[in-house]
Image 1 (spheres, rainbow, N blue to C red):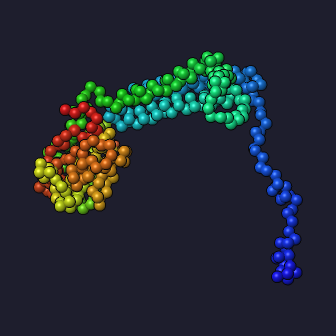
Image 2: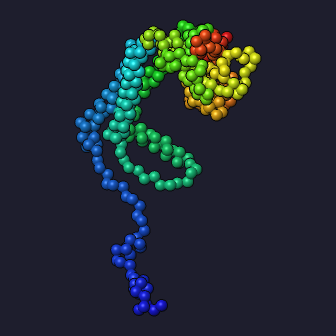
Image 3: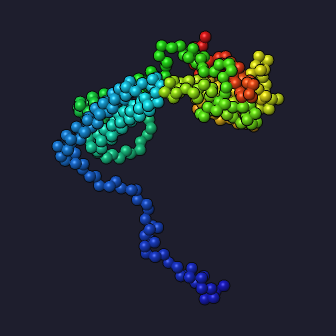
Length: 352
Ligand code: FES
């Protein structure tokens, strides 16, 4: 079709780039340039520099004080007293101390690098990856220059305060580890003794209402505590007792349970009870998959097969969850036949 017949074709044939567009297309993209270097106030004013130095070492020493405070708070509010108010205060003040110690180190380090260390700008050209002797010597020189520029060797107050702050910030962690080991008591004995005894009713956590076998539906998983625990005052070792005695109750079809002859009477009509404390490092095993009958520990993904004695089928746990033998009383409530027959919880203690 001729141009005069098609206005669009005519338009295309007569198109020329606009001058602005031609410039944009022909210009290669320029590498971004560095903005002009601005001198900092600490480079120009010795008083400001002095002030910045003082701020940095004050922050490092503040960090030391906060670490000491964290340790003091740990001792002032002992968690082993069992009182909930002490546990709250311990968490609050130890946490605040550690947070302040780390925050002060962070702010001091940033302020030091921004206001005091050299802010010379460098362009590093690409070079062959293999270093020659001259390159190595240059690297050593660069470290030495950096030392001079940062004043790490020269500014003794900052250097010493920083070392003190970093070392002190580790101390609360070391002290807190003390709380992981029970004082003066054999951990195995501690984990062997729970509140469960023969005849004690199983109760809902946290309400403490006893559980009838008839109310446990097929496929359900119920969080259970000993009935006696609900009667315990919350300030009298409640948490410690609960941490050891907490149990998960599940109902399966009786024919799905593969029970060993010794444990044939440890369940009641397909209802089984297992310690909820993971045998790896003690997290609560709380995720129940009713189709597969698997219990999952969310901490490190250990899986236990409820249909087969809570045997470990995956993950780092080294032994099955301890089973609580159960039956019912004359009113139809679920009760323990006895306490656990083995220690609950982690397996890393040296066992008898
Ligand atoms: S605590 Fe359960 S898998 Fe680690």
